[in-house]
Image 1 (spheres, one colour):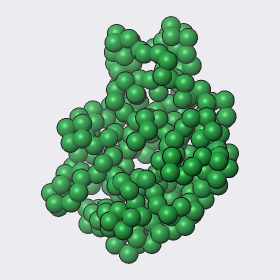
Image 2 (cartoon, rainbow, N blue to C red):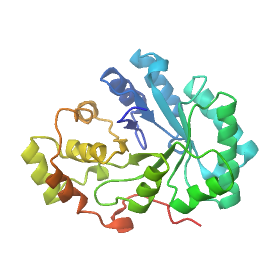
Image 3 (cartoon, rainbow, N blue to C red):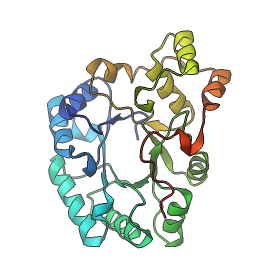
Image 4 (spheres, rainbow, N blue to C red):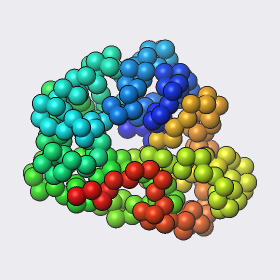
Length: 259
């Protein structure tokens, strides 16, 4: 799995953004049925000229479509939208809907994997208790858990559990939706002569996460990947990590407390 991907939530120039990203070194695109842009992702892939086999593409089934037949139909539609034979990663989008429904959705994604429609299965916005349901049901554990993750919302119990169980942690909203005015972020951007966004992405990488920054601006898309030519010193990583406000630091729906 690539270490940085392009997020495309609420991206009205999705096809163009995907094409720009793929032409400039990205190899992972993160979409979802809820975003209503799977078709545009497919268009962007074709416009990029990059071989589909070299690209890692993700989508997610929303809780409205949890259930054996409902999820199967949703995955079939996702594949049709993309214009490809498969997804590299397919996630259950959240734990909303209750235990029975989310387990039914997860089982259906596993069946899609067995059928070759999905290569990797994961979850999103899952707390420890939700992943434990999967383990207790005797099902294959998710390879990925995608959660809101940045210095202000570090989801430490979830991250620790995922690390213990070899579950990759993908970080959505790693750029705190452009909230770069924090003095620590500004100080480190100046110190390292980098953009604030690059500091946040680099923090995520050094924490062992897979960040999914989103942008529709071609220049920003390119610069967000220019994070491999520097390293944040340990004392500066500590400054960023000290910004954690737990769940109160979340800026999205973050439904990890769903029963």
